[in-house]
Length: 455
Image 1 (cartoon, rainbow, N blue to C red):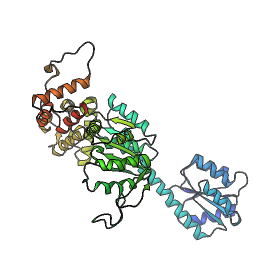
Image 2: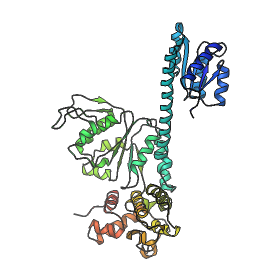
Image 3: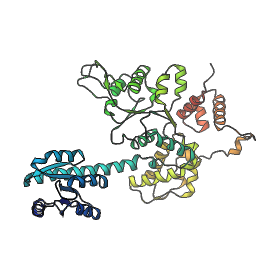
Image 4: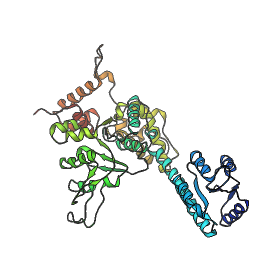
């Protein structure tokens, strides 16, 4: 049931006549004889709409409007005023009133204005509902995990969200870089504006400039109309540039202009256009190594990485795996209507000891596959993919000597990768299989540690 309309006036006869008109129009109406009584009624019951006279003794309609804007900022207000005081009604609209009616009030105009105001209020409520839904879907609380490494990243990201500063998110494929970018956007002051994503590695080289910056009609063969680029679509919002390391050098110059000057030029255009976007970029590549190789601009790197964030791979936060597994399991059961399937606690060790080269994305896909193919009842070890069932060597088998003075974890990882590469004569595929990671993951770590095959 919808909330009623509150009608406020100090003239009893006009109050009753207007109430009857609104009730005949299908509206529930409460009445208040003055601003003080209106505030008391509003405190006791929510209302869909407030219609108030402006000229009232004691608390005027303007006074009431100011109080309502403070105490009930989402309430839609219509003001009523005599014909000779329209200027006051205009002032009321500057304070946040939706519309005004002049006395004597025409019945048809009253119902039309109220209908529009009610629709306006309902749209605001729907937008708020959608916003709440987006917060739940893309908020920081939706990023599963309580490991210290992940919580550190989320803490920095949440503080970065409060500004318009450029952010560079780094991490292996499947770690959730876009999810983190969306969380930053929806926690920022741009949350009501667009979040536009473009993957620089999936668009053909000859089309990416047009996709980013748009083109004018006739700019090239097939350009039969003007086209907005992703940057323009993101105006006032956030532009997410995934796999920024794949962007060609010639376009990096134009992106630098966007980052510095907030200007773009369409393909075939004759001059620059101003845009207002926040840039969040992401990559799995070692941009510092690319700078040394001359394939990525150093000035663009420093412009994008004002706030650098690195999402740790899943194998570096094993304490999060059980929680993620249960989360994806419940979601997959709901998605596929498999409420009969149970994942026994005893099987979780197979998930927590696997290294997940594809990270969170691989874990989610594996869980969905298990749920879809399950025969029913408890999941068994036979329902797990072969790579999960494979026994891993115990840590003791590596015969590591831990020095009293401490040891660098990254140094150990670098040494293991280097030894594996040498063992297989720098064959990346064989070394990746030996280390139980994907080839992409191995290449990412090689770039991070600057490991290259000797010439």
